[in-house]
Length: 200
Image (cartoon, rainbow, N blue to C red; front, side, top):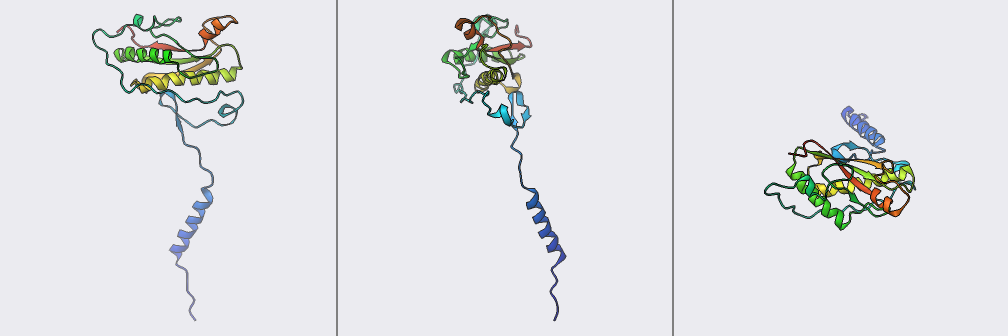
């Protein structure tokens, strides 16, 4: 009686399939595109959901269309008087423990988008700031959410992402000192640091 021999090429294929199945256990999470286009892996642990991390909020989107600039365009002095820290773009402010854009903040960002359309050589770093209450870690996370809310809204208004980047200073760089609501409200802000040629 002749014995049937299993073909060697089939044995190799079965072994390869079994090896692939054994090695395919865990998959890395997809990379997340951050502000400015850099790709990073999602963070886990305390920074990704600990008790000191503010809740993630839905980011507002901008209007469908931004009117083009005609004539001489918008000058720095036209954009809400500029920033108290210098620069042509006014700060926007936030409610306590929030990163939601108010109607006034959205209106200011729409003016900023028009100004940026007329000053295409400029780049902007959007700084997220908080008042002095809360831990350093918590306020760094909240400041990042505030900067990111402004960043996403400007993107929705047609400003290219490679012209924008975000940074959070948390409570480390107050524009107003003091332990009053008046001081705290001025420090809950996004500041727009302009680089390039804003005078052109």
